[in-house]
Image 1 (tube, one colour):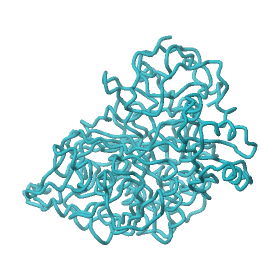
Image 2 (image 1 turned 90 degrees about the vertical axis):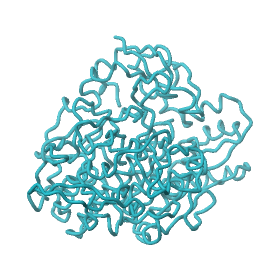
Image 3 (image 1 turned 120 degrees about the vertical axis):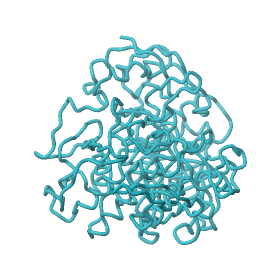
Image 4 (image 1 turned 135 degrees about the horizontal axis):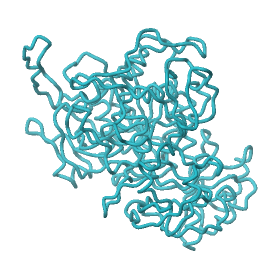
Length: 602
């Protein structure tokens, strides 16, 4: 964001910090005061974490991801090998390589004319929290606008989803057929029999496509004539039970992994997209943002996957609330949730009900804007609090949290987790239903940009909640499916692409709820009938948020600037640094060492 684009209040205020998030949130980063005279990040080659490691004068090897200058990949790799450094992986997807170097080598890398940027091979962790309890039966599906009793309706058939996580354990709801493929990364990829030593990946996969076979029961329903019926329901059924899960294991038995391993998995998904029929990638994991998104190799891998035609769903992160004081804060989005083209998802607490009227964004759900770039995130929010899904019975989560086990028919084969990981999984399932609904009618596939626009346009906003907290609103499966099944991408660019009437409202629990009918494009809200046209913006070659020519079909302007729409709604809890910080300084000079809370003072 240029200084000229900043709102007047951001340019002139100073901020007094009251509370730090704490080392538990970002253990690898030391909070430190911002040096207003420090050089701009644009003049540096090392990201913030590597700057910290270099100044620490440690002796342990440092894992890095090096981005060479254009055409200098081979030369940069050759120098590292000649120096005795271990090259871990080389990536064609993002023109980078990962290596282990001595801390003293960071100076040499920064001085190397063949090197454009050096990033920490940061530890990524899952965005799920085991400290939660169960929810009311079948509320998840019905609050999305789906019929929990319909076993023959939309189910995500023929949609392949790469779940990049801790693995998958087969069970009564996840077995054979759609759930029989797993690859392990780190020293691979190696195809293995599915397993999950942590348990998070199994939960994510179950929310997406668990069959619910192990939780069959009955519910009472009253038809239009007032007659009561006992109907069978699979209480803990996933959103898209016929979707095919391709498990790409990158997290270990503690729920942690490395950025380089995640990039390996994304590159594998792109390279094998046609063979494994992968249409969606789910990334319910992340790490703190240490650099602008244009140099972040994980973000760039996500962007490359989107350009290849794969929809990428990312969790926003669970850093929206101070664990000591309970205060809510902003700017807690993690990487790769800051990727422009990713569908970044925050978490809703539905309170276990079908009704949308009592929904709230979970206090822990990370809010925007993103560090360095000041981009509006998340894109949408979805149910993610206290969700029940299949358990990995041999996992560390299952062993360490017996109070979170959920039984059915005297068998504790389910587990409760909360977090934006779960919300991302639910959204991934909804997107599988959207793609299925569209593919049944049209040959031209939906692009990732079009999917994102449809998902945002049909979302149902939570009243009184700012866009940096909820994005375009809460995911609406019924509405998103209806719109996805009505757009014909084969029509010429600029044409009205709806093939039938669309009612921009959805009835849930007897209440008619209007769609938000907005698309958050970068830091600008686009409203009107944008989603009803086949626009240049929905093309594969366009990076979400970049400037595009909209024509006369879109209303937009300065008043639609989502990040700064009404700062008084949220600015009293925004804090950008440690100590007194002039946030009129370039964001590259502000140290995003932690999510911080306090009071905004003029």
